[in-house]
Image 1 (spheres, rainbow, N blue to C red):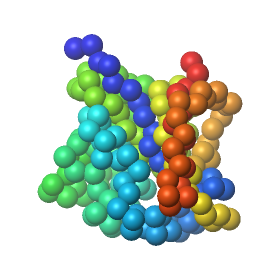
Image 2 (image 1 turned 135 degrees about the vertical axis):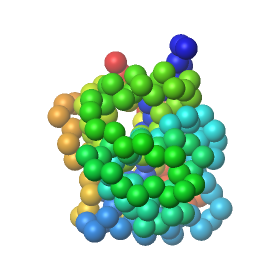
Image 3 (image 1 turned 60 degrees about the horizontal axis):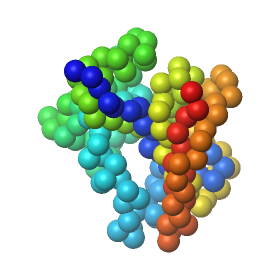
Length: 179
C-alpha cells in the first residue's frame, strides 16, 4: 500500500506559547468552546487514521473522558502501560518515532494526528517527521505553564498555507514545513 498520509500537528496554545497551565490544566480553553465553533476540527478528523500522543496527554484524557479520541486508533508514547477505556483503541509505544510513522503509514493512508503535548510535538519536529502544523493561537496570556515547543533542538522553517481568524479571537495558523 502506498500511503499518502501526512503527519499533522493540530494544537492550541496561548498567545505566549503555552498549551496548559503549570498543573496541566487546560480549562482556560473551555471559554472558547461555548460558541458552537469547532475550529475546523470535525472536518480535520475526517482525514485522520491514527492519533499519536504522549503519556501525560493520554492521562489527561483519562481524567476527562470527553477529551478522549474514540473511533480512531491511538498510539500513546509511554514506557509504561496504562488503563484503556472499553471504547478506546490504544496501543502503547516506546521506540524510534520514524519507525512508528513508517508502521502507521503501512496501516492507513489517512493522516497521522500528533496531539501533544509539547515534548511529543518537539520530538516529531526535531525528527523531521511533521508535514503540516495547524496551530491555533488563543487570545490569552498565561505567563507560565507547559510550553508548546519546549525541546526543539534546531531552527525549523515553515511556509504559511492559511490564516483563519475566528469571532472568538482565536487565529488558526496553517503551515507546511520546509524540507
